[in-house]
Length: 275
Image 1 (tube, rainbow, N blue to C red):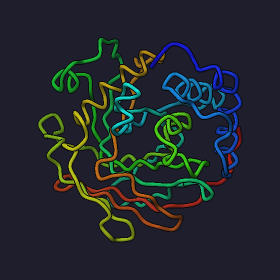
Image 2: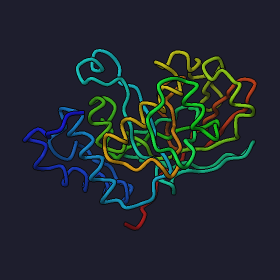
Image 3: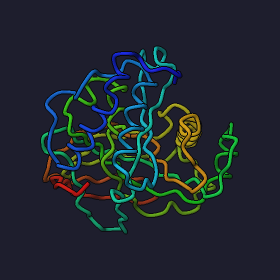
Image 4: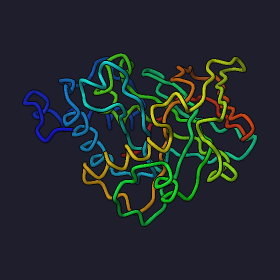
């Protein structure tokens, strides 16, 4: 990720972070990026880390997203990470349709994802293969990530801007456990996403680089390099299987994991909270 911040970003890391934290708390929009946009990974994660410190809420896990070509080669990374705050995680039993907030004046999307839990007590080193990764997990759930930011251009402006605002995460629907997950080929599960009953995307995790277990390895390496303690256990939202699907307030989302279960939610408007 690099060790030094670019001069133009170093001077306003705190200002950018504070602007995002405030806009999220106030449930309002940001018409423009609030400062000089980061131009490297070190600067982007510095903004994210400062925002996490300002925010102060407990983190339940992290989302992992993909960095596409050609930026993956230019940046030296093919994935990105962002925090998932504990108070934004909603457990949904079969048939539950929780209301998940998004920013009315910003960007909003829903993503079908597999959620993998790294067991408490992990102390490294980061596993190098799927078997080693399975050995440090204790749960896998079906899920939906809510990707939303006060800044509507967060995705169009590229992965560095995405990283700077919590990786564009605003919530997680944690569905049913995946039965017998140790023996399931995660990359073979057919997944489809429906919005208001219309199929908007279908795929398997086989299209996602080195799969969900690879996302766990990436995240652990990323967090350890940033000095984040990973020993307490954490959820990993491993990436959008069927794509990043933009949503509007009032719509309903259904993620179907064929033969395994489904997760549902309703998109609602975010409301202000105390900071």
